[in-house]
Amino acid sequence: MVLYLEVLKKYAVFIGRARRKEYWMFLLINLIITVVLSFINDYLYYLYALAVFIPGLAVSVRRLHDIGKSGWWVFIGLIPLVGWLWYMVLMAMNGQSGENQYGPNPKES
Image (cartoon, rainbow, N blue to C red; front, side, top):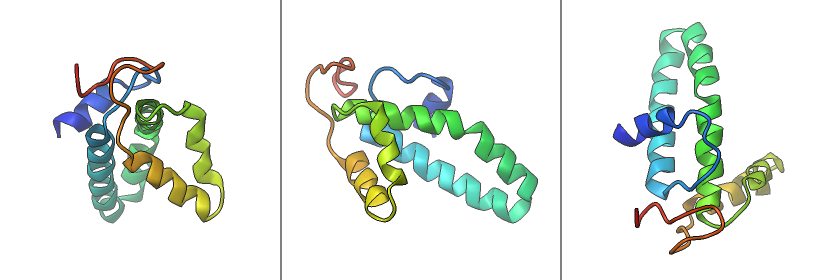
């Protein structure tokens, strides 16, 4: 839950790097909240989805930075079938050790 809140605190921070754990915990908690809200009320579901769109995009870009890729790689998911699968592979990759062009390694900070 702490990592989920950290992502929300960095609401629109597209610079820097995000660890795998930060990305996947945000995605998991987001999924749970989305499923619960979809059963409760559609209006709340859409309101929540709108509220977490920017933080979700930002943590995705920071995650791509962690593996040394540009944030523009987030659009690979728009390619039918293969793009979404490749995007998941990218998100699951281990981050680059040490500092890269996007900043210091978050595991070492």
